[in-house]
Length: 389
Image 1 (tube, rainbow, N blue to C red):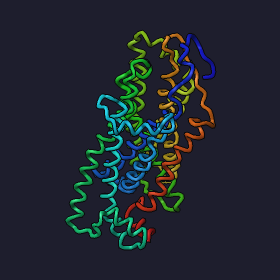
Image 2: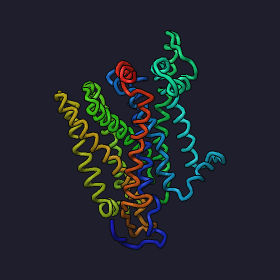
Image 3: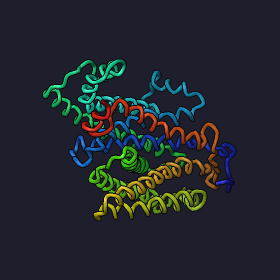
Image 4: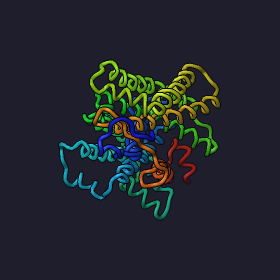
C-alpha cells in the first residue's frame, strides 16, 4: 500500500482514521471476550473455568481502563471528549457508546467488589496502615462476612454476570454497529458487521485469557490447570468457527449480491488488502489456528503439548483479530468515493499515532493488570491469600 491507484478525490489522499482507530475496537473486544469467560463460570457454572474466573474479571477491567486511550490520542482536542457526557445527545452513535462504556465499567467494578468481598475482608484484617484503609474503602466498611451475606453476594454476582453478558455483547456489537452504519464506505456497510465484531471480540478475549494464564503460571513457577486450558481451547475453537464463518459470509454476501459497489470492494481485497486479508488474516492466521484448535479439542494431548500449542494458537488468533480490525478500519478508507481508485496508507513507527505509540497503549492494560493484582489476588483464594500475607 504505497501508491495511489485509479482516480482519487483530493480529500482522500490522507487516511483519517489511523492505527489508533484500529486499536480501539481491538481493546474493547478483548474486554468483552474476557468478561464472557468469567460469566461462563458465574452464570453457567462451568466449573473447569474456576481457575480463571476472577482473573478474567480483573483482566477485563484492566483493559477497560485503557479502552479510550487510542481515541483520546487520536483526537486533536481530547478534552472535548467530556462534552459528550455533559451535553448528551440521544441521536449520537458515539455518545451512545460513551454511556454503554461507562455503565459497563460500573457493572464490572460492582461485580469485582462482590466476587472479591471475602478476600477483601480477609485482607482488611491482615494488613495495616494505608492498605488497611484501602481495603476498608473497598468493602464499604463492612468488614465481616456471614453465611447469609455470602449467599446474598452469590445471588447478586450471578445477576450481575447474567446482565453483564448482553451488556458486554452490546459494548462491542455497538462498535461494529458504528462501522456498519457508515453508508458511504461500501466495505463497512453491511448488517453482518456488528456480528463479525462481536464474535471476533469473544475470540480475542478468550485467546488473551488463555495466553496470559499460561504465561503467568510459568512465570510464577506453578502448573496451570490443564482441564481449564482444555476448556478454554474448546470455547476458543467454537467461537472461532462462528467468527471465521461470519467473516467469510460477509465477503460472500458482497460477492454474491454483486451490487454496484462490488467491483471496488473486490479490487480492494485482491489489490491493496491482498496480503493482509487473504494471505495473513484468512490464510496463515486462520487456517493454522483452526487446525490446531480442532486437534487440541478433539484429541488427548499431553499437558506440555497442550500448554505450548494453546499459547501458540492464542498468539496467532490475537494477530488474526488485529488484522481483521486493520483490514476493516484502514481497508474501508482506502476506497475512493469516486469508485474508481484506492488511496494508500503507510504505518509510521514514531509519531503520535505510529506503531510505537500503539504498542505502548497495548502494553498499558498489562501494567494496570499488574497493579490491580497487588490489590485483587488473581487466582483461587487459597493461593493468593497465602501469598499476600
